[in-house]
Length: 145
Image (cartoon, rainbow, N blue to C red; front, side, top):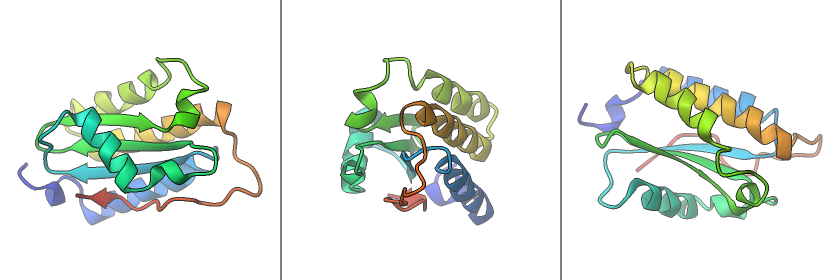
């Protein structure tokens, strides 16, 4: 696969956006997915850059989560904001990572992202439950770089 545009079909992208909407009904946390072809720096460092470029640090409770994928590099990172990191243990994202990896290993990228998004929503619910007055602070659309 040489192009990020070939990673997911438009239908699959919409299914991922739908999963984000479902997950965010469990939590006040904000979840985004960013896809790009490759990164010239460490994937985690690039995920942090993208997190900031997307202004994900501007949520009220500092509870944004980015799932960053460098398609050609076959790398992904789950990056959570300070509000999350202050409340959870270091292994908090392990089950989310595992859900993604299990599907990515068999080439099911859409389902890996959906499973990871839904798992993240479940986990965030423990520390950032959905409130009746919650507003969707960040776009649910997949960003592509």
